[in-house]
Length: 614
Image (cartoon, rainbow, N blue to C red; front, top):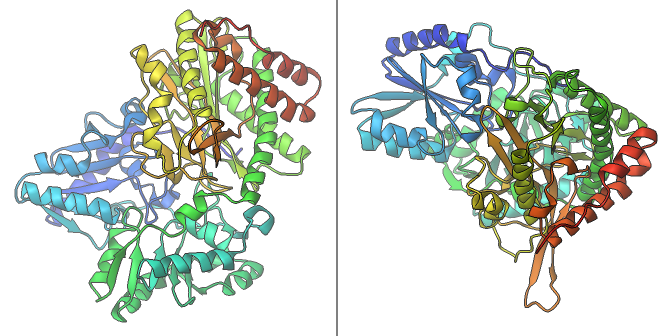
């Protein structure tokens, strides 16, 4: 199994470990310390060694910050984790704050106090974050103190070693472009920014630029390291060379000088002392790097990671790979949904479904000679009230039966060498209530709204996010997460900078892949989410229109449960989209199915009665 079911979080760890941290703070003249859920690369997933926030607090979510003072402590999380955090941290130790409405930078201004000294690890906070924190601290009369060593690393006596998973070369047939050509494109971008060098801190960018994949963090094929790209082509790659086979080392030597991670800081210092102009992405690069550059006479050039947009705009090989991956994955999901519908209520639990889903994905991969490499994230398998926890992670402690009369939310994804998938389906166990059917249909209307949208060049995700919410808003409902995140090509399932959300400021460009996943969550009762992956299509002229418009191509291939749909709430256009989508699903994945599953799929994708009035 790629997924384990150990306890997601243990609130009992908080008290003794916070006590150790407070003792260290007192001994070192500090009034507090910030502990983000981050590593030196600012990725969503961190290696076990870097899971400092979970070790200290018990919180296992992918976004959060703890602020520990000598006499009080706070846990900052966003809307996805407001329920989860209360199960995973000791509420006698930590007060819960909103990471969105009152983040640490805002909280500090109003609460830290004059003369207070707040420590932080400059490797774990970005340049932009520290700028905001410093401004807030100054306004409160406090001081932000960068530390040479993280105190968690001092008090964590059995901290795991850094990961050394093998690195592999990503074949050109899947990458679609040679690494040397990608690097040449990045060099041109560096020159346009007026820099002599650029530091790649995001392992996804390094993986994309060098056409390599690894296994240093859960569920995302990344090799942790840093790269310094030079305008003169003398690139440097800093990565533990125990990860390299002879073949991989020979390949990488043609692209860059290879160094151990311990040499990275010295290399930055040397360049800075030589007067280098070093580009760092302020929203990705650690504050420590800015300090190394400016404290040693170099020039810090604030510039976006040059690989982010090229990586996000997929080429034809990556798009073809994703389409193929989604056909296989859709067949696997259909097998799972067919199996699930045949089981009697009361005979399954959340873990059983996760295990079965991985089994059918493995089988489908073997049958098509494209093995399942990993899941793309821990499957969200939420029965009844667990489905209302947006980023619920099932464990043996929380495992729940799929009970009659409830909804079951299954959000999962897979990593194949040709593509990354992410799909959510919500199904009824037994007879759903009319409220469930109504809310499901409102969510579906939002998903269809995004699927059928046309939009001009230059449109940002923030400008279309409301489309997914309009039907819910009309009924006084909403959901506390973005509508869509970017998706990588056999890389991170949550990839930036593209997203559909109130905070989605990046322009949506042809070739970008995103999720389309509106939802509805009734605390203590049920959760609903419907998710397909979509691809931004090239702009085309609209008949009778004035300007060309982009649209979305849907990639995900799996039926949407018609038992939960109220057709009287759908327009004719929405019903037409659903019928067309289901016909396409049947045509694409039926060749990989037979017998009972094929008969089930034919029934699940049958046209719906057109009760729409509009």
